[in-house]
Length: 229
Image (cartoon, rainbow, N blue to C red; front, top):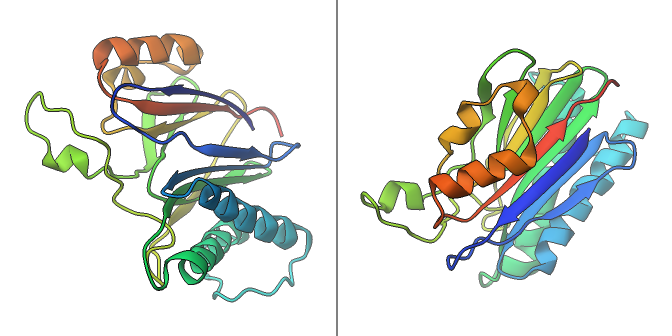
């Protein structure tokens, strides 16, 4: 998996995510801190450490139960995310709130891509010769509160580290060479994304169209090329 990304800022603040990509492209983690910047890195480190251990040792121990309804790959990223939540809650926020983190982890093995998500970015897939399809959506609460023509700062609906338990959206999909994953942290989904076909999914031109469509709304956009495995 190869990630290209672009961040667009306005007078409204949207924190820029920290990004990790495994050298072989098998693991991508995108973490956004709402509070202390170093906490995004701490959450990423926990996910990376657990997934790296799990994929090389099927007997790796876990403080959280593996779910039999999920594939091993999904369990790896889900468990790593739950560990990150536990570390942030007990280490930083148990007595008083300091920081929360949005996180998306993608793990590819063979033709399967597994994901675990808390908050933004949202995850979409564009298969060859097909239109964009949503896989997992990270809600922005400001979209529910703003009126027509009103611009509000982003307001995350879900964050790691706020509570001892955490809801993790997770799943997997099968991919082929030529497919793309689209990652978007934004208050709304620009129509520029939906109107594109896979052959025209180019980061620069999509970014330009999104800015022209809504110049006052900040966003972060990532496009993952799914090369032959």
